[in-house]
Image (cartoon, rainbow over all chains, first blue to last red; front, side, top):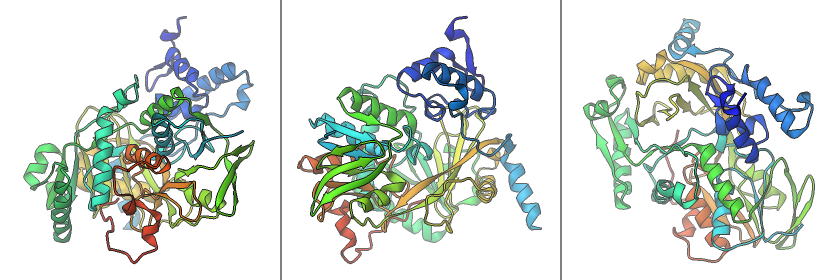
Length: 94
Length: 381
């Protein structure tokens, strides 16, 4: 398969080609790549792309995947509307 | 290893300083960062750039920086999109006292040619129709203000500096600075010793700790500020909407998501950047009051970053009398990203003994030795 046809991040439409473009510019950590490509910033929050990119980085760096750090886990685990958060906060106070 | 200058911190300030110094002819510049590019405050900031300030110094810094951003792609020969969007900052006044401050601020801005203007509620609604008209009394607006992608802007300085021969070292924290009486001898990292007599402290949230390694006391402190991001949606809000009194800034970035943040008046002075549910709840309530339609969007992520605050909430861009060769660029009080071009320009002028574009005394660390002139920046979230 051609690298520009392989999507490593489905939330932000990032292809394997684009991933390697930035890896070759010196961005060889997940967090560094995240800030240029938005991988891990979409609705999946790295749960899908995290492992795929970890393997690509391991290949490139000639390391075992377990030795490549993946994304920082941040809240929220799933998307919640702002107004639902605001209302839930009001209920707590009553 | 030897260097003509060592820059500590490869965030937006350090990267800009590196490029400006190299551009003005300095060679053998080395930049050390404790982590990856934009791991610190730069990569955690709200991505806003504005010229509407309350002090003349901040207005000047902002105006010069905005002029650079307008040409940044060409100046740095950068091919990627820096996502510069000049759709303005709409700043809401919600009390009579705040309206009086805005009237005063706008005179300061006009004096140096910043094209800001005061707007009525109706005029503000024409720019952002989904504003709650009952949540504010009037507004201030400048069309030059807007958004810029902090990761790409830093990468632009980083790549351009590298092309001029600057060397960057990541994941290599500075552990000590060796001095002998009033001169610098070396910078020590966890891996090597770099002999140098010029050191620039651009370590953001850790600038005070770095300066302390050289025996210099910089009157700044760091505190956590939090931000959240929503899912992307169709373009629905042009300018940044901000209110100092309601404690909010909220902008739709070109990618489509909304970024919003607020400060915590009880924030402790430390290096904690963890996310809190208290922020999430207060942020949600504030945005639902001012911009109710935004309330329908889902939050996908929240994070924290450090403001490095100075006593008057204006930057310290300065040499240090006690230690010739030591320079500080810190205390940006949450605005280091938007002031980064002028920061690099001023520090490089100080080092190369050139006449700076802005009166250096107003930014000097020495201003805190004297009795305060009351020139305190209040236009801060």
